[in-house]
Length: 104
Image (tube, rainbow, N blue to C red; front, side, top):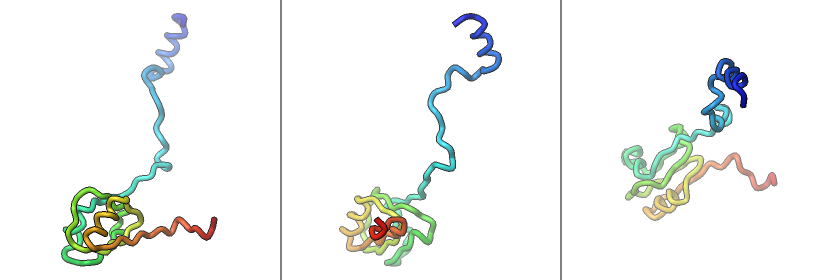
């Protein structure tokens, strides 16, 4: 590359070098509000039923321990979270309104 092209790039495109990749448009990003299984008992405060969808929580993750039987309603949950809650004697009800098998 000759000297004039380099000087033009330095003058008119100062950030030409060092740029790598791209950022996804913010409107396309999916951000979920999550909670772990270990936090459910303190959130329930002794109740046996817990509606996480009404609290604005989208997803239940499986980190932590649960010892009481809880009935949890949530939009989506990981397989480990469902396994831990069912092992404690509770159940997980998922709101899968987006997916309809009849429409296929």
